[in-house]
Length: 213
Ligand SMILES: [Zn+2]
Image 1 (cartoon, rainbow, N blue to C red):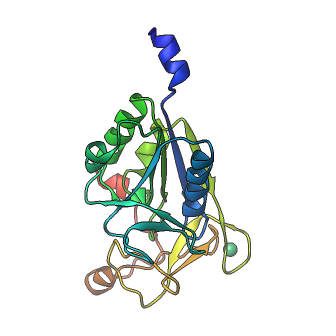
Image 2 (cartoon, rainbow, N blue to C red; image 1 turned 90 degrees about the horizontal axis):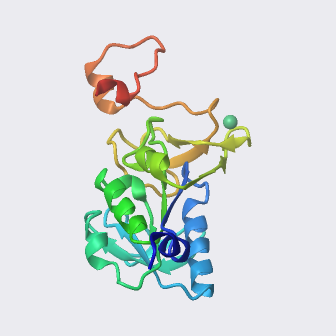
């Protein structure tokens, strides 16, 4: 088979579905998996173990839509557990994986599979989150979804951690801990550690973490 005909028959593809919390990322991932089901395409859905909301073995959107999922501890497990005939690979909560997910997604797409990855594009401090920025760069398609700002009703692009929730970097969310906000109403909270150890910065924002590299 020529390279051309192989590409036409099996065009590998990476799609990234990103946005803040409550922007419908998982809902869209589930919708795409259901479309693959209707098209009779073999599919598998993976998610990291860190997320145990609602169900241990399914992917659930905030409106309780469920799709069964394989829980994994590391991105490379996907390569071990993907079936030879799987055409569509869905990955939820992609932000919780290491940058190995970029290599894994590339290998899956290079083998002719359609790879769908949903994840938060920024964290609760507004910083690019985990492997998602790199995935957005190498993906064939990026969908940025918006929630609704809980203050003004504008399209929301940021995840606001609510006061009193705590300062640890990864805190798997559920209702009452986070809120969707627009750029104007997003106010990243200082971590509790920095409150104890650093002087007030007179309103200056923390430098983005990519400056730390
Ligand atoms: Zn707003």
